[in-house]
Length: 123
Image (cartoon, rainbow, N blue to C red; front, side):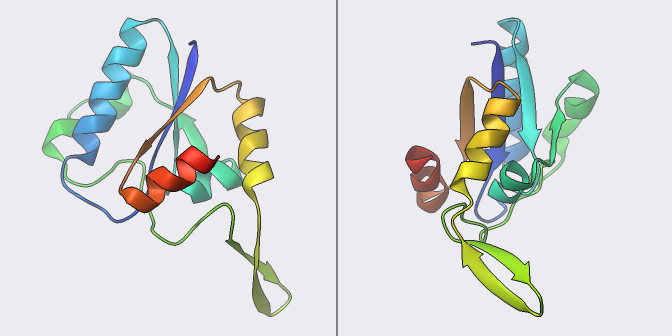
């Protein structure tokens, strides 16, 4: 694997930054690149990401929550889209997959609870 993606889904929780930091260190030790998607699956669908580098994780252990942001609302298979003055829900899983393919992500690491992990498995 040369490129990995990571996102945090669901609610905020202690220890998420520690997991992101650990994944980053192992990824870089293997010579791979790591891309973090902001605000969970929303960032994956919208293409809102950053390539994680050492300055991003410096001092991260002492900070609570997740540096990537998270949410517990945005399911790629039932994603809210504004159409005019209305919010409609659409299956945007193809867009999520396209973004992974565009970045040539070999593996997506999902950090979260049962719901977030079930979505990751389905993708």
